Image (cartoon, rainbow, N blue to C red; front, side, top):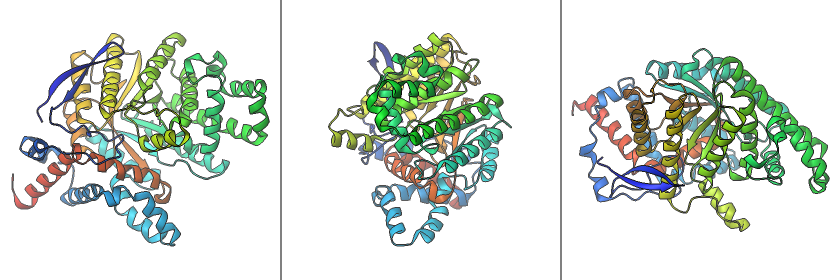
Length: 478
């Protein structure tokens, strides 16, 4: 695809963006709630897709290619991608969970997840590593209605992923989602607690970073409104949650395995940022171990990122930053409309593109000036953003083997893009999700929904390359 470079500016910083004049602006995986429009030039662009598919899919069998093509094609149909959660809920009401879960396990689950147990992930991780691709072991449990012992079990499994990752730390990450470690209602109330002092983590008192639990207790002691509505059991759950998270980060620090802290909805995010900075202050002293996630579809996304980077310099720790566009645009917008507050999402998709590419440029400049200053994960399926990142890494003279700079993509998606990064000898990682089928359904629904938005842009290429290679193998066509 032919591109030209346009210039825009974010907070006074020139930001290069790569966009074709006729190219759809829906070229992203991180969020999408409406089907992309496809211009005539895109429809006729297949002759410009010139990658050698025999090399691109050398590690895949023909059956694997056929399976991937069918699943990604199925995700392009709105009746499936738009109604995944409804269909799962309906099957549960009708008592059809067992047959539906069986079907899901052998179709969508097989495409987007590595298995149900941590043991099953090892085969995929080793296969990826042989191809020069790192793995991010992801126990994809979230927002579960489980008790304290269940959350402890989730923490224990994540700790196991850290120990497995320690066998190959240069090609391994772990990851954690806080709604897998505590009740979402408790996390939302914690968000309210922290926000009552400041929604800007950099304006919180020192104790918020150095002793989070004491910080919470101080708020409760000084705020009669919160003190009267927080029960002793809720305070206990808060302490247990923070301790679970710390158990995980202690192991990461012990084994030198970096971990990605996933972002969530804005009504959790102030508390997540506060804890991310607190644990980063404690464990990112020598190198980035904990990577906080920054959502560039948020109006304040760039400001928050800059504030946290400045905070890391002031407190002398290494910021770890995973840059994403965002995954909760629909629910964020609906909630803002329902509760009558300003929508936190960027007003246009182009604003999000500019914000994302600006963040990539801004952080790579930081690393250019000091290669050990921070860690960066460029997490995107947007081809233009990936091209921008690989180009700037070369332009800024950053060593592509620097363990503090890498790209990230999802298992079962955009393999052609992942392999192109490997071909440029850049570091790239795939999320390798696992967990019981019925527990990872929220994750699968998002993957199905995202692939709908993926069609018409990068997935159009993915499907084209898959079809081309299948045809070459079966019919000998070029």
